[in-house]
Structure formats: structure tokens, C-alpha cells
Length: 104
Ligand SMILES: [Zn+2]
Image (cartoon, rainbow, N blue to C red; front, side, top):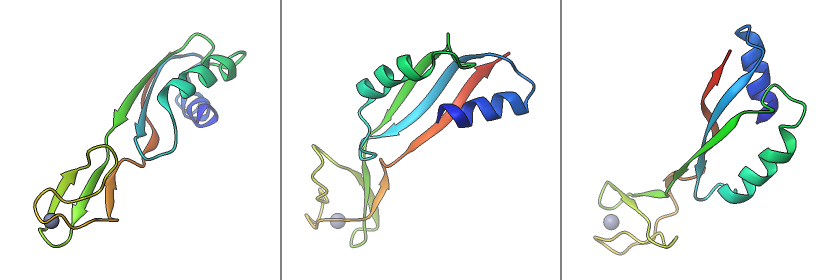
């Protein structure tokens, strides 16, 4: 992730990364707290050495094929609140992406 950020920053002629904004889905398997901790370690000696990390947490959203509707899952139980059918169609919540960053 940081490598990608550095590559993008260099591509735009920047030398420093000031802020990184990540989107982390609830189902991505990544815990925001441990991501922040890991970032503190890996940023050493990179363009992002003094960068701030902001993490946007994306709650899981499922699709119910029967109701043709999206629904937010509660406590990771993917049961449609209307028809009570379980859905495996996760529409949001697996994100792990660099949404935005500030460079100079
Ligand atoms: Zn339903």
C-alpha cells in the first residue's frame, strides 16, 4: 500500500507524502488499529515518514436477491432484515484501498 502511494506521489513529481487516506472494509480482514500501528513502523525512511494516516472504515453492505435491495449487516450476520434470507453477496466491506493522499 505504501509502495503504491510512493509510486503515485513520485509519478506526480512530489517528494513528500503528508497524508494518506485509506478505505478499509469491515470484511477485508484488516483491523484499522493494527494497520495504524504497522504504518508507524513501515513509514520510517520513506516519503511518508511524517505522514498522517486516516482510515475510513466501511461497514459491510449485502445484497438481497429476493428483495432486490441492499442491506447493512449487523454484527456480521448477513441476514436480510425484510425476508430473513441469508445473503452471500457482499457489495461493500472488502475494500482495502488508497482513497486519497496529500503530497508536495
Ligand atoms: Zn430480502
